[in-house]
Image 1 (tube, protein in one colour):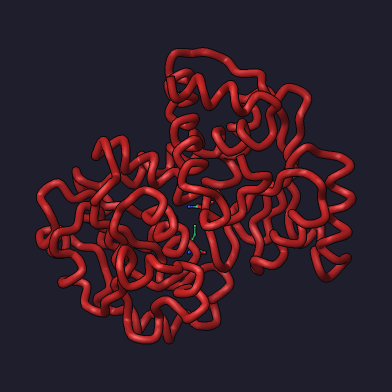
Image 2 (cartoon, helix red, strand yellow):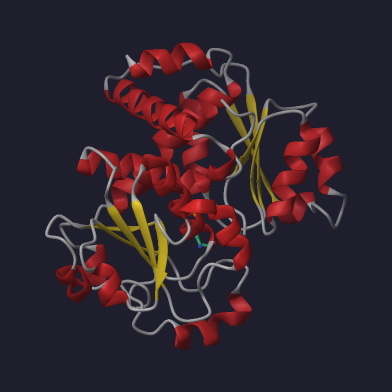
Length: 315
Ligand code: CP
Ligand code: NVA
């Protein structure tokens, strides 16, 4: 297993499959009431420069259920790159804890933490990636479809952190990814470079939601304005009108199509209330699976017996 979990393009398809297998295994064991102790005596520092419900609480519960402890600290208090450089924070934390989870504004901050801490670093969302979310999303997709190969996953919104990580998860799993976005909000040249040979083939972009939804197995959306982009909110509200998951859009997709959203959702903007509450919405399964997916990440990065648990999960 890779040392860090920073973005999905930094891990192999095989490692992605290992994580999904271990997540499924740990989820099953939890349902059977089996308690885990693999992280006994281990501590995870969690730095949050932005708000969170799911990421914070699911990591806290995950560490506790694996026998370890989590230490939450607000970004304002730490002052990474203002009170002191991220690399100094990394070197100090690396002497206290066995792992660091960070939700940050700038991707470079996670990279600096990983480079200088000497312990595994997990990206809990940055401006470019949200790998924990995409892992939980694919655990959910697999549970509902049995497979993810050949599925058409359509993302309505902009090429943001959730979108990039979901596209990378599709590349690992043999799904097709289509981004439907207004002009000017699609993948940048840097994104296309990161997507490599998948760009234009497995990963495509259109400006027409209805066209994108045709044949979709999954309709996925996220807020129009991400954390850190608040100054652009008025401009984005105008630009994204119509880029919404509704029951009408769902009617254009395959009959088995599922609705997904990473949450928090802004009903009436990127998604209607009817779509959130629709029988084919699997939004709250996704939220639950954050816990199981992150347990797999913690187990494989912070425990000593990664190979053993992978082999148990795959047998
Ligand atoms: N989806 C997600 O990351 O939720 P939070 O922002 O509440 O952590
Ligand atoms: N794209 C959103 C995801 C929130 C979980 C954001 O960055 O605010």
